[in-house]
Length: 316
Image (cartoon, rainbow, N blue to C red; front, side, top):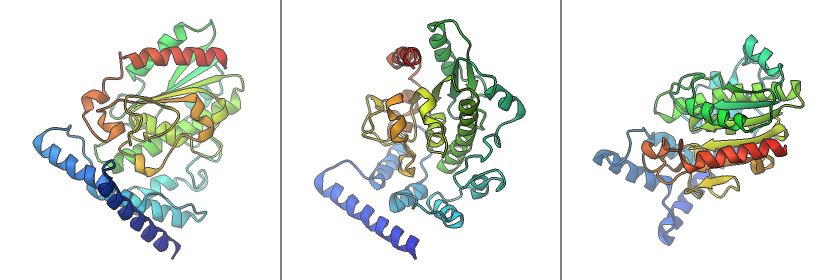
């Protein structure tokens, strides 16, 4: 009954907002955006990235997942919002995972070598999370940025650890959301274990595209050590949200392709985060093409990031 009233109210609100938007000349609703996107796709004006109409329509209708302490109701609500999502993967092994997906023992999604690595304390740890369809451990751009930052820091033990998740995914929203959620568990578990084991280690997070979504979701997990993060930088995030203090770039009022899912960087962590989005980046704005999305490397944003991370580490 509660969910029925909630979703009916949310749907009515969405329709009201859509109507008022058209009447007042405000920015287009996701319905309007999808229609225009479909027209442009036919004419070849946009990239071939798939935008799934049923999922968008449901997201606009339901707006957000209601808070609930009942696991069955929570998973049912999530399943209705993202059709086809593998709920069994989200639930995980009940003996190791809480409702939110964070491992109770902080090691459930880590292998033996990763556990040992998290407990072998460096002075600085760069946790990098690649975008979709990039090869594991070879996120070259993030690796190069980490190298540039390390080269400017005082002598000490610093290292880079790449997030271990399956980033090879299709263009449909369901598989990409599932991939980001799976990656978020690894980021949350590894970062939490590192923070618990190494109280003096400075932690830097860097993520691109789908990897940025994984990091943002990870930062919302219970017990995530937000206070231990020295700095975090994201580029081209599909969870990009307008009006956030951490927003950077030329499209600070954009809404990413997954933005309606509602995951946001926790308020207490926002001062440490820089979230870049460029006008025309189809992933973080929902408009444009993949060429812009691939253009963050070797841009002024890269130089800004290196300076920001160096200063963040020195001041931490």
